[in-house]
Image (tube, rainbow, N blue to C red; front, side, top):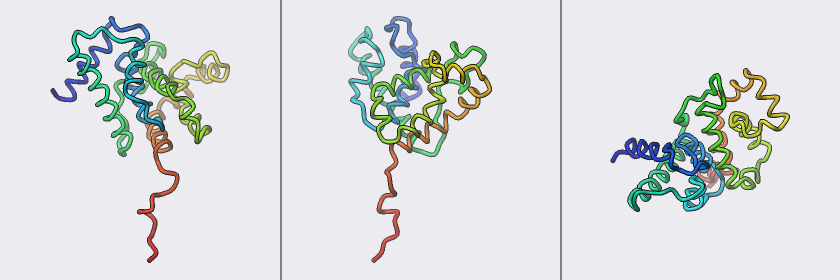
Length: 195
């Protein structure tokens, strides 16, 4: 089965109605896996898979469970490779909140991303709290999770500002990935050698 076929089966599984109401759908799961790929600390597979579903799904068989979990792990690796390359990250939805942000797929993606951050929140902000906060801001705004906080409510009222922030999300992901994974200084190989 090709990766594209695996993904469409994963999507059908995650978007089905019988999953727990707090389980992430495909678009949110993509955001979640993106955050896990950026996170400075590897979260154990079992932990993030269980958190994604909120409670164990009713698989038709062990084979289905293995297939779904393996595809999730492959998708996470695929996202990680994209982030590490110079290509713009691919999104499973339009990077746009549209007319009704609450109904937009991007909002779901950003909520999933924040769920991934919450799994290891302290680790994200450990080393460069200000930079990480600044880079995460557009995703936090687009997620709508923080709209009750006055400063977020104020940003949310300015649609032009929100649209500008949303447009930055793809490049922010790359910046976050580099911030969390690039060594503090250039590796010795890149330094001129003095013999």
